[in-house]
Length: 164
Image (cartoon, rainbow, N blue to C red; front, side, top):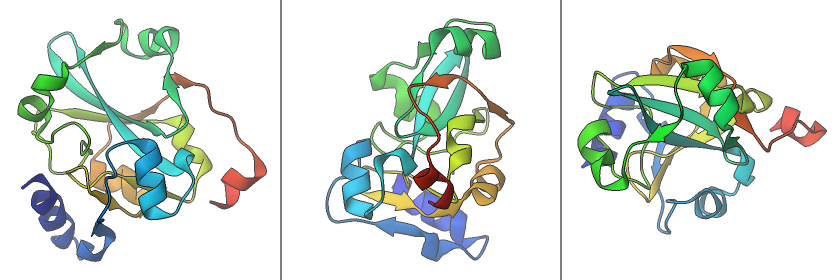
């Protein structure tokens, strides 16, 4: 059902053709990259956290990892992930398909600077067998992101990234 909500959300903007179902699982970065045919770093993985008691999503590049010091500097709290079993009820999508679209209205979305290296990125589309094909401006617009943050490490820019 989450996939259909995301598809309907994008159809309302005339972009329903950007939401794709895939035969094989896209629930992990590696599976998604293989199913889509892109580099794992281009997968826009959506991570769910609580800041105090408020749920937030942080969308990061597939090769990036949350850096606890950077996270605390940005949100003034230690990173506290939403428990796996609570994600669907709090966010609106189950783990493996969490994306920043068609989510619960109280959930704030942030985009990590690790994504800025790419022309196109591929977040999940609401379930573990889907993706959305977007450029960065579209990701920012349709996710209704509040801001860009720098909360990750483990990634770096190379010449191949700039053309992706």
